Length: 55
Image (cartoon, rainbow, N blue to C red; front, side):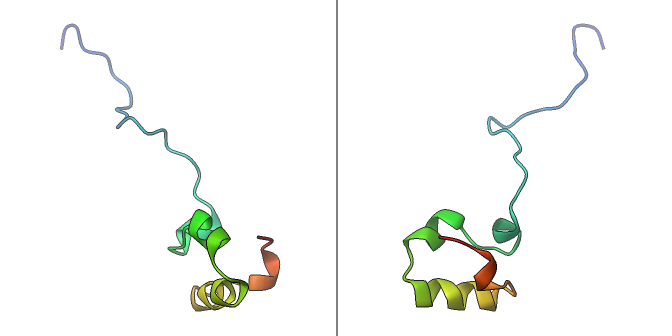
C-alpha cells in the first residue's frame, strides 16, 4: 500500500488513563459540585469507599 503509514488512528481526543471514579461510571467533576451527602451516596452505590476521596 504505497503512500500509507501504519500506526494508530486518533479520534482527536488523546486516550487518557481512566480513574477509578470514571471506571465506576461516575463523573469526577460532577461529584465535586454535589452536596456531601449526595456525593457519599453516589460513591457508595458505585461500590467505592467515600472516605478515600477528598472533594
